[in-house]
Image (cartoon, rainbow, N blue to C red):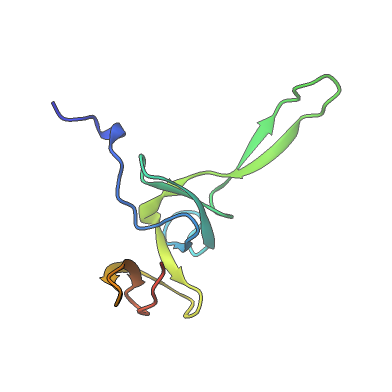
Length: 114
């Protein structure tokens, strides 16, 4: 019997620390760093993108409540790797370096990311 879809991990084109540009949705055009990836749902948390607010109730007596803001995950298909040198978003391809390491390369600029 095949596994359910929720337990599968997806191969993602972005990693933690990558600089990406949002290509669709409310935050289209924003550039930020990937803070965390969630391979199970193929989502990423990007700094400064998809900001949500949460009203936090006071926990202790005399403490005041507050409104906390945080970044919510967005789907990895809505982000594209971004070249800071060329200021352009690009798809990626996988190539090998001279010493045989497999690295990610931006298709538009030929820039190696890893």
